[in-house]
Image (cartoon, rainbow, N blue to C red; front, top):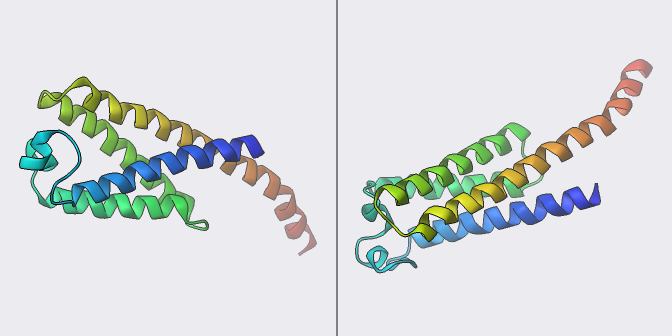
Length: 144
């Protein structure tokens, strides 16, 4: 269980770091990245409207909070995982569609793999917690 928690928190930390980095980078006047990002901005370069930058920044920030704050309901965490998965897959497709270099296409796919590991261990830890809590619930309901 200790190993599972370690893997979960390392992969979740990587994903949250990537998402926070992208939120900050999206909102810089001169984003880090290829020259076209500094002249056009990443969203214009990908053919996306600027309001998506704001929406995506808010959604990513909320997703990071959902994953990192203990006690957040599992459904909210699962929505964060789903949103991050859609975002990462869409990023790879968007970079491919505008002819960006292979690193810009592979990079989100690598993090999609890390996200998958994080989600797998999230589910694994959640099911282990449910199994360990079940006897206590049964005992409490029998005693009531």
